Image 1 (cartoon, rainbow, N blue to C red):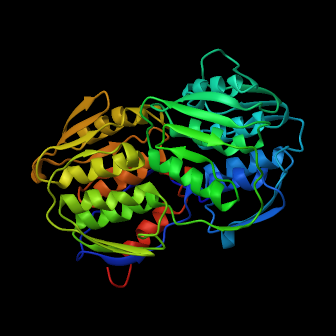
Image 2: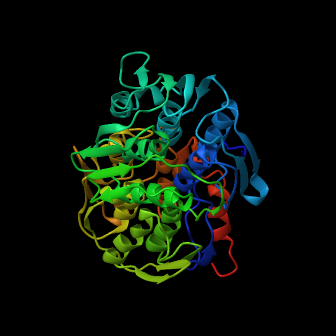
Length: 435
């Protein structure tokens, strides 16, 4: 990973509106899903376009500790992996997953479908992130899993002897990762499994992404309106799998175009994308940007920005990006139905509200979102932005520094979680020949 300074002051954008083309790294969500499915599959798989980041390295290191053969060539964004046919070779392992929620939840379910004794732990923040609903669902299918400290959070202990199948219930309002982890493991159950979702399922596009990866590796559960899923005993088959650029990461460059009035094209991410966060450009379009959508590229051109009232449940990883764009929009922006992001790397609603206020915004924090009233441009003020060990806080608020002199990002190295090269890519846009 690159070396990062303790803090980084962003230079305001002083030149003409930028015109640039970028290609962001591979999707973290797709990379970690493909890693789990390929690890469970029969035979070898080759993942191309894979993300190299802290979260994906945590997953790769955990799989290696479980006896899976993984070769990671970061220079070519390629991962070669030989699957275990549903039974991890290591009968015991004590795994550390840092603050990677996907690694925790996906591995917990996958390990419960095999045989062995395992423990999963992480950072102090990880010990605050919920996993109880997943454990309850797995135990109802014949597993023995528990929260070691009785908190409903890690450390997690798994005494695995396979899953029986049957009926399971998963809450839908905390994290879609519970359901994704369960679905990817269930083909290795001894019998058919019916999973009912209790309440409204958050972040539904991520479930569509999970099902798409499963389908590519040869397994297709039935999906009844995101309320009931049926998975039959089956097996994944290893294959070559291409990973799209990360739509959440692309949101920062689309937002850059919006707030500078420039034009940014993201290559490899267009109307054919299976990622829900590509819909972030729809929000920017409502705010006054011009969006050109092609099959394998998307271009956003900024214009005078107006406020928006938007339900961001389906694209909640872009909430902080929009929060910063709202600083430069005319009117009151309302972000709704994202209460579940309080359980992410930090309480993202509270953190976003606190840091926007430092810059001069009037922000009303609500239980499931925010109201953001931007100040007059002359009242925007410099600030040192706390990032709360949250990569998305750092990348989002870097954009504010392009328009507000004196914005300093504290702990800029936290971007390594999903986008280690972010600062280099941002600098490349600034020095692009067409910028």
